[in-house]
Length: 260
Image (cartoon, rainbow, N blue to C red):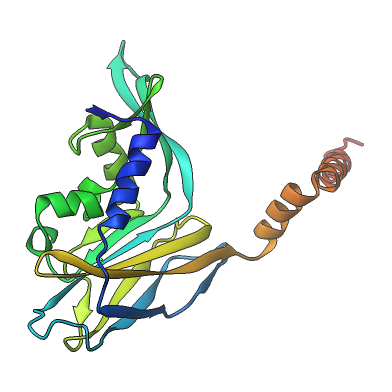
């Protein structure tokens, strides 16, 4: 386990940004829908990200084939993973670990395995693959950037993956031509509501060439969203209406079940 202060982590991110070279290519990307509406009977769906690599006169003429890595990160929140043990015939929580502002949805897609795209050092620096994504934990008074096989981290990623909320696919990006590409972004039924950031990184010969980003939003519609919005924006009105509905329900129940 490697303990690091928040400032050190910010420095690591800044170093990663500084590592982006002055590029001679640029990425033009878009998603099939920038606003996905979710109803109470939503059962999942898929967006399509597509784009192209635009070259200019500064592009080296001997530039080889391109590799592409797409990272989709959903709204962030604090989450807790608990360890359970069987004691005296029952399962109880014996330990826990808090994850700080981690994505509710996280997906990494590429056109081939990450270890064929870049060296291990570049993979760690650019956070290629679930094992290299930074998932901050609180360990006592410290913040921890732990190794991939840490039991709490492994359990957290496994549980999110079982629900389709964390995933990686190293053959999900398809180059239709040497410069045109597409990939699908699956959205499970339990997809969190909020804004999703999409980061697209272009590699060549193991080095980051350029990157760009996009975004889309998932919103809930229907009566459930109306209730949630009212509770958040008009707490007093929501409380009065809820109390009134409770009184009316009790009154109607007393009439229905009243004994003559």
